Length: 117
Image 1 (cartoon, rainbow, N blue to C red):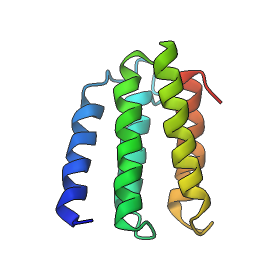
Image 2: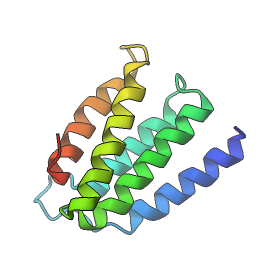
Image 3: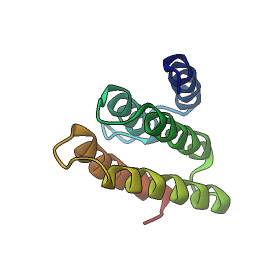
Image 4: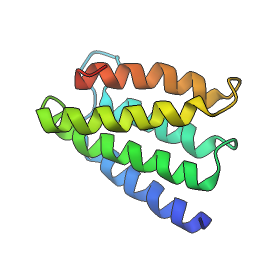
């Protein structure tokens, strides 16, 4: 997959994330902040193949789109699917990568926001 395709996907993710409201939880990260963290870590991780990086960014985009109304039943299902896809992707990576640590922390918080496991 071409680098410019990843850049295009990354820009789409950025646009979707920027549409989300800022956290109003007194310093605690909300969905917008968590997705921004996830996007940054995915972009910076060199252990991901370009196809996997593009796929991971697409899942972040799904979470951003569904995050606009996180408690809606259909959105919860889509979020659950995206979270599971990201978790399975991280299972194939070396356990020493920063991506694994971030995925474990951030995905747990995102799952809580959506009210899914």
